[in-house]
Length: 150
Image 1 (cartoon, rainbow, N blue to C red):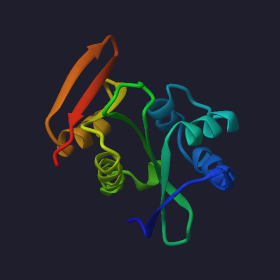
Image 2 (cartoon, rainbow, N blue to C red; image 1 turned 60 degrees about the vertical axis):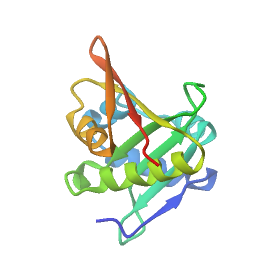
Image 3 (spheres, rainbow, N blue to C red; image 1 turned 180 degrees about the vertical axis):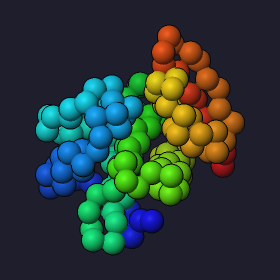
C-alpha cells in the first residue's frame, strides 16, 4: 500500500531514476516502449505535465502517474502510469489513476487519454474501472479515451 502521494519536481529526478532502475525491463517497456529511461526522458516528462509520486512507508518511489496535454487536444488530458513490479496487483495503479482523474477534472478536462500496448491488460483493466471508455486499435497498440464524469 502507499504511504502517500505527492507532486514531483525536478529535485526528484534522482528518485525517479532510481525507481526506474528497480523496474523490470518488461515493466519499463509496457510504460515507455523501451527498456531504458534516460534522465532527459524524466526531465521531458516533468516538463510535459503534472507528475505524482506514490511513496511507500520508507519514502521510496513505488509508483508514478503523469497527466498532461501531450496530444494538444482541448479538454483531453493524457495519462502515463507506472507501478514498480513488486508493488503491482495491490490497487496502487488504480489509486494513482483516480488521483490523476481528480486532477484532470479540476483542470477542466472532459476526457482522459491513454495510448498503450493492446497487451497491457493491467492498464486496460484500470481504465475500464475509471468510467466509460472508447478504444481505437492501432496495430499492436490501442488509444483509450475515458470520459470523465463530473
